[in-house]
Length: 358
Image 1 (tube, rainbow, N blue to C red):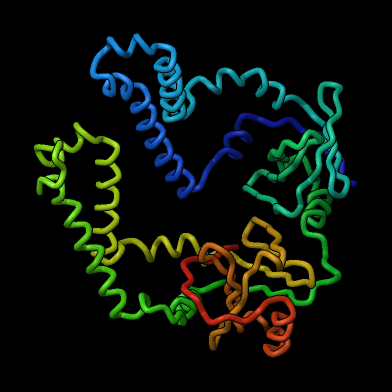
Image 2: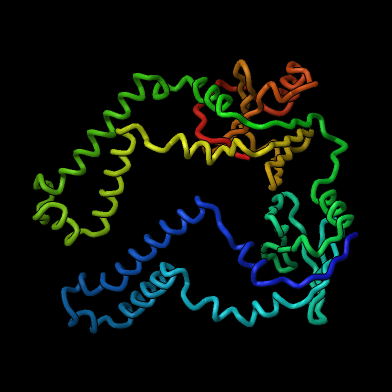
């Protein structure tokens, strides 16, 4: 049991709310889509009825559409004003509190009120330079993230807390400590039997994507649409949503045709070659410690495994996998590890691997 007392600051909240580059990119794309949907809901009714006469005739339904459009526009602007509405709640968050960690639960006492939360250990935990972030669930079933500043712990308490975060596994069969390299990922990718992975397959795929992109680029000016005149400008005036979709597919096809510029840098970012990985294999699960994050994966969510000359590949759904270099086995025997995997998974031929999932 560990008991600490602390007060969160606005700097702690800002540090906890920082997002990765990929997350910020997704937020920008989502904001653009929400803005387009909002504009479509706000102006779509007027464009549909070709004027205001029928608009006012069905004013109830139209105002509901306007309300939805305004809501999507509010989401597109990153919820302007939400922080002002949450100031009272934030002031409570910044108040002094006492937290007691007991196994899989934690108890927080603040303003004379006591709350008990369940610690969701199977979802891992996060760490920043100054904070710990723990996934929790209330007695009502609401999931949240619990932020604990490192300054609240004494050196001994922090050491005990880290042991609580990563308890020793008595049932561990294999504990592997290694760094994934670009050569490992390249070998796994080249081991695929898919035709598209061959030089001829890649050339044909790039040609098809390029021809498709050129066709989409020229389509508005080829009189393929009877009610569209004036090329892309006329397409935008008549079908704005379809124009955005066509432009997106056109850019995607051109990107593939020119060789997927930047894909190597994206692979490096997704695979995190600079992070130390600690894999703990037990009879029930795989516990993965990558950098400052920890996560558990049950064997039933791993589809199969295959083997290359220098690595084992544990395949997961959605083209993701775990790559275990044979050099990481260290004192363990390769045949022993293979026999262990055969007791948990079925072997399968190597498949195309897009990214590692840790």
